[in-house]
Length: 501
Image 1: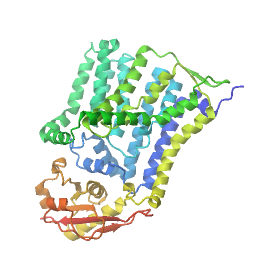
Image 2 (image 1 turned 90 degrees about the horizontal axis):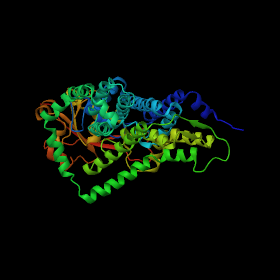
Image 3 (image 1 turned 180 degrees about the vertical axis):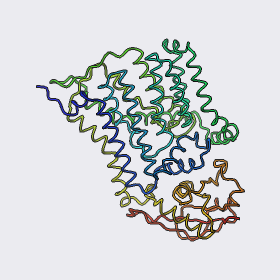
Image 4 (image 1 turned 90 degrees about the vertical axis):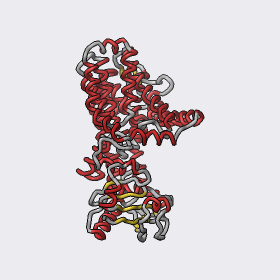
């Protein structure tokens, strides 16, 4: 007798509901963890928000769209608003993959493709750290979905929507050029693609891309940022051996990122024919064009990003890995064949639930446990609000003017920039060309607060900072207590200020 679990029945009867439920649970968990347990934004998020506060057409760190959206979300709802924005991107990504998969492999198999995404670690664990890679995920899926409308469904009008998606992607990350190149290659290489080039629509789409991206391109030309980037790349020039070594490391990381999905497949499908009846999901046969489309973009995008990252020396796939593996689950489902026999229903459901719930639970537990286990600094445990409030109020109390510019160690300076009540501008004193919105004249006129990590109570300005601010006098370092202190040292911050003139 065939026994079917509730999970299998839900996938069979209402795959859309399963996908929405999985996406919303995933988003809720990864929104609650940083909102409840992080005392400071993770990773580069403070920098992203601080740069977005200036609303420039671009910066040393790339195109502006992610920074703008992060700043808007932060102004509306603080750090939880940015965490929510990040999870909205994840939900849109999952839903986009489902809508694309639904027209290629059918709704049930598309649901399996989305559920497999839980096992792709770069699509889940890093998501609280909002930035260009997170925003690029739904935009990449959006572009691919509408490109399929052009190539697979023959809707020429979709070229225009595709152009808008590609433009937004290019305003998010320059790595969007990889997707643009992949679309161009697939279009030229396939007979259907060449047919779709015969009308005026693709050329109008190219014009739309140029118009939307033009303000940023104009900024790149007028700001002189090319020279700054070129100097950075020149300093990081790598040898052939370095490139090959880095390429091997990145390829290994790419495979490891899919470990969870591969484990799910091994549990669900197995390697031997089932001994008894098992639930079977049959789809319509996938056409040659559909198969080539999915497999090409699922493999070409991450491999190109890994290769570019190794050559450029970014210590990771250029633009982050997340946007390039959004079709990994769909590719695995396409490779599985037209018939999927789901063995070990209970074990599969349990394994999937563990992959969904365990990472955020572990992250939350780590915040509570690590302070009692390690003695090194945990950035997300830094009391950002207390730090920003103290320095903002101290500067205003001593000078009679709100804190307008903060510099020094980038992580601490960006924390103060987003947490101080006056929302000061972030300034990279070690490389002023990276923050052109702060000029020497503004430094003199508005004053500046300089912060750096302090190991003790010494009132000595670090030599590198002293060289850039000769008149800076160090104050007594300020000590802050973490929400969960444990064995960690107190957060001690050295600081000094140059008064407005």
